[in-house]
Image 1 (cartoon, rainbow, N blue to C red):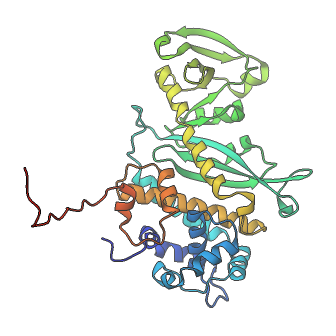
Image 2: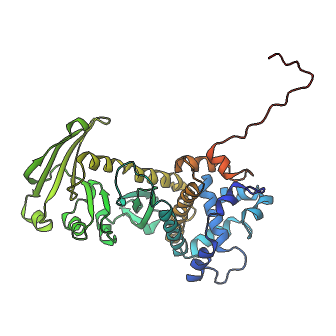
Image 3: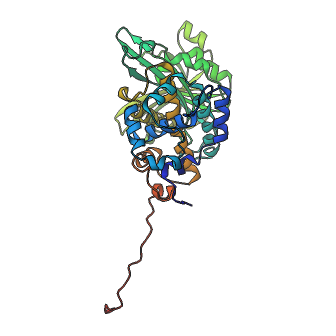
Amino acid sequence: MNLGKTIFSQLLDFLPIYEFRQCVKRYQGHYKIKSFSCWDQFLCMAFAQLTYRESLRDIQACLRGNQQKLYHMGFRGNIARNTLAHANQVRDWRIYADFAQILIAQARELYANEDLGLELQQTVYAFDATTIDLCLSLFPWAQFRKRKGAIKLHTLMDLRGSIPTLVFVTHGKIHEVNLLDDLLIEPGAIYLFDRGYLDFARLYQFDQAKAFFVIRAKRNFRFRRLYSQAAERTQGVQADQIIELHGFYACKDYPARLRRIRYFDAEKNKRLIFLTNHFSLPAFTVAELFRCRWKIELFFKWIKQHLRIKAFYGTSENAVKTQIWIAISVYVLVAIAKKKLQLKMSLHAMLQILSLSLFEKTSLFQLLSQKKTEKKKATSSNQLILL
């Protein structure tokens, strides 16, 4: 029920404030702080993410322009550009990383029974990375090339609800495939990879852990066909083969058999070749699984829209990581609100609507469900009723 609360305040009601305070206490976030708390910092940064603010001065101007509403929106400290800049620079980014993991755990529990559109009971993950370009003169700690700076965002996403489960922020020089060593492999789960992760020694670890993977093959992939299975040609499956690797080092890295599926995507007029250690799934289901990877691309698209170069609010490594983790927290918060309010709208559509409505005093459910209250037209007693 809305009792005159702003949309921003209603959205914050889904946050576990006690857990946030525990994260602050764990890293002594309030050491020698008198007025501008970590919660005020989180609210300012969350507001900036939701409304696409481009600078600290922009954040200050927007919030001070609505000074009379700030107290009821949860702000207690004075909003100042220098104060927020100092907080982003010195307060430990792990406060917001740990809080994001708490929100992720809540979201995963809510979306555990989400329908993937496929008849699968297993958990399905997509693992990928995106590069965020930085100006090397402003971010000298993030050297990527001789005259270019960058960081990489490695993300493991649970496709049931598009929830980022694990996020690693590294320098741009770190190759994506190295992060496979840091994954805790879940037995029985299905992992989706693009061909940049084709490392047979690392993929064999998934097979040994009783997990499944689906990955695109490279063009120079060498193999020996053992036998072929019936292909569902009417659904675009051109070949379904059981193979073993060809080559001394490849056989040493992955001594077991693999399944090779050649699929023609009629929509994009493109031929795709998949490798998997899952031998019981229909070949068309494997192709449809890989199609679900677009969800992680949408997540990266949203992150990059909020983390443009001119939109970084600090140049230190701590400030950049703080902003990234708060952006992820906002994304997961909206996912939690969507599930608890039982909304059918996509996360990205919700974020677009929220970006324009945070100061409105209306029902959050009514705003996002797009249900309009019908107003009865009052008929004049002096007007004749013809029919």
